Each structure stands twice: as structure tokens, then as C-alpha cells.
Image (cartoon, rainbow over all chains, first blue to last red; front, top):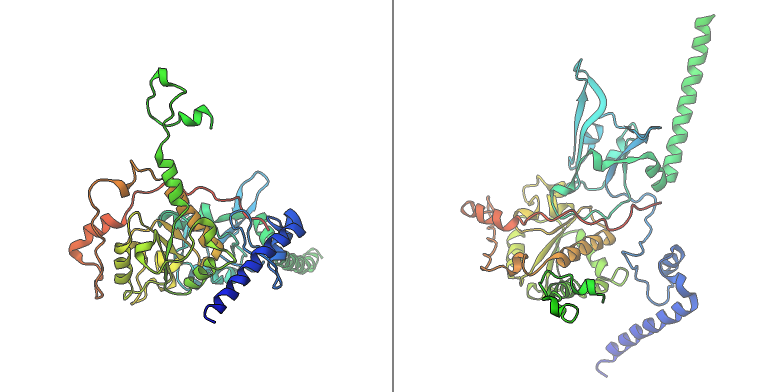
Length: 207
Length: 219
């Protein structure tokens, strides 16, 4: 019979439609807008509707998800921002599409370079989210962000300056806890080794 | 509806008719209905198109925003999603399709390649940004933007449409708008004699800052 396949398709849609209400009744309100609700709707054997109601609820991103780079700064006790970046320019050199541009700071008196970026621009309409800058940075100063809600009405709004790129360490620790703790651990170990190497030399000098 | 919202329009109501007559502006209803039935025209060019297809499927489902189905024809669509690397060979077709769309028409530039050329910005065959050829309303960064990032951009577009008013919007102004000159495949792409017209057509007045959609994500 002609149209049999079409009817069976409609039956499938109708079944899912009914199952949505059955599931809603069975699980109640926690099926929507809660973390466990999203998790249950992501499974392969999900019954009923599995649409993510985007602006209200969001699909959680994995820890290694990377979108655009950002600069990490340490927060001082009085709220001052101390960027980890030393403007060495390694990220700008390794960047495959060359979207990073850095202006170094010079000491106004002596004219010698200061390890701090004066300006730091990333053209996010060129960035290809590869993460090489974060991979190569020797100071853990540039990291990949999780924030993807960045639509803008102008092209100029997509050239991010140092203000837009800077984010605190606490934010980085929040989005990538595993990476952050591993890096902190490595740093502490390094410092301990350094202190241990210094100590015998100091005692020898004294003796 | 309270009195304040009824009287909120800028029309003068004689004192003897206060409270008995209400003048609402049709604008708001018009913009509201328009923003809730934006039909996209698909223009998948590269890897971003895969994310765009995911958007139309049931996981993210743009029908929730009244965008229903991706239209394959410019005559039935309200906005164009340019998703992917725009090559010089493809630019004439995009501009021609844009000209064929009925007004009001909008363009969403999806992904790094469409907005700024992306990693191919210096390629011999690639156009570094579609905004040199047609006016772009919303730029979505990312390589590629995730379906949710694209949805965020489309919501920003509906917000822009919601703000448009018949009196001020360019679409309802007098005088017919000239079509955007179609580029010609060749060394120049743009006809040098039409530079002024192209500039005029592709530069829309700058809109106010995008409203913050949600708070910073955590975790």
C-alpha cells in the first residue's frame, strides 16, 4: 500500500509525543532545568523529548572543551590585577592563523622592556580555537575559555583587548579544576626543589 | 493591562478622553510577531554547516524560536546564515541570493571564516570576511561555534528585530534601496566603479551594545 511508510513515521512521532507526557508525569518537574534532568535526557535510551531548552538550560561542556583564549591574572589583596603574561610573544609566534598581537611595555625612564603586556589583542574572527597558545605558554598565562555566548553586532566588537581577555585565576580554577590542581602541584614541587638546592649552598657559604 | 502601559505611547490624548481611549502602537505587536517567525535560509559552506544542521535537529530544535525549517529558497526566508569559509568563487552567488531575499532581510555571519576569514584570511582563494560584500547583522565567533553559541547569536538577532520600529527602520523608509552589486569572479571581485555603493550598502548604522544574555558560566 502506498503511504505505509509515511504512516509508520507519523506513528513514531506520535509515540514520542505521548512518551514525553508519560515521562513528565513519572519524573515530575526535575526533568527540565536541572542538572540531573539534562543528564537523564542525554542518555541513549531516553524516552520522549530530549531537546535542550537552550537559553534556560545549557548542555554542560566537558572540562577540556575549548573556545577562545583568555589571559589569567592573579588577584592581589587590594583587588589589583597582576597578569601572568610577560609579553614574551611565544603565543603570537605559534598561533597558526596569527590572530594575536602584543605590544610590550617599556620602562618610561630607562627604556628597558618590562615583563608586562601594554596591549594584547586577539581577533576572535580569525582565531581557530586550536589551543596552541595555551599549550606553549611557559607561564600558564593564556588558557582556553569555556564561554561561548559571544555574538556581537559589529566586527570591531570581535577584536578583544586586554580588558576583555583578562580573567582571574579563580575563574580558571573553576572551569578547569583538574588542570589547575596539576599545574599548582607542579609549581609547588619546582619551588620546593629550588629551595632545597639553595639551602646547602647557603650553609656552605656560611661555613 | 494597567493604565500606564496603555498610555505609554507618545500620542496626545485629550483630557476628556483620558481613561476611555487607548492608543497602542502597532509597532510592538508587529515587531513581536516578526521576531517570532524568522525563517532562516541555509547557506552551508564548510564545517560550520555541520553545527548549523545540528541546530535544526531535535537536540536543539530552532522551531522553538519560530524558525521552523531551513529554507532552501531566498524568496521564503528572513535571514541568511553564512556558515563557513567564503571562497571567491562563491561570493557572487551569496550576494545574488541576498539580493533575491525579500525585505526586511538579515545576515548572520557564523564562525571565524565567514566574519573575518579565519585561518584562511590570506588565502588566494578566500574572501576575508563576508561583510565586505553584504551587510552583516550578527557576528558569531568560534571555530566552529557550538550549536548553543549559534542559538545565542540567533537570539541576539531576534532581539535586534524586536527593537526595530516602522518609523525609524531603514526597511520601511521611502525610496527603494538599490541592490548590492554582485561581485565578478576575477582579480578584483569588486567593481572599482561601485566601491562607494558597496560601502554604503554594507555599512549599517552601529547598533547599541548586545544585551548580556546570561551570567558568566560556572564550572
